[in-house]
Image (cartoon, rainbow, N blue to C red; front, side, top):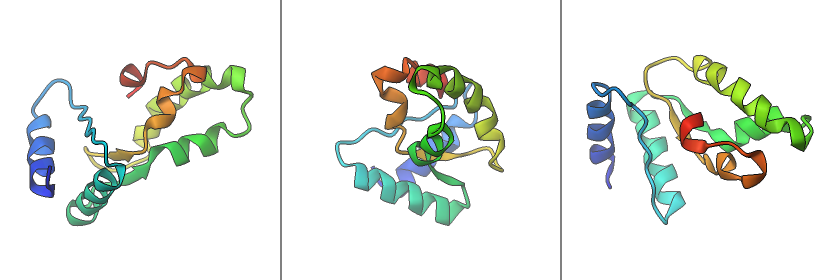
Length: 106
């Protein structure tokens, strides 16, 4: 997928009920490059999600992180301006220890 295809998909999603777009590739560095390019070109916020989330969870005991993640996520998107947020490195949500349904959380 090139940058223009990604932008076409984002534009199309704005008119849909469900607006979540997952870009999946075996080449994480390609996804990161495209997301950063889209962020620069179209002024969408780019967020290294795992980095931000792990910083918020570092002082939370492991057995209480699930409830904190669920409470943090709604406010997370409000911290960014605009109708598009480019989240990269969402793999933290997939850790079985957290017990979070990643797609539902997103």
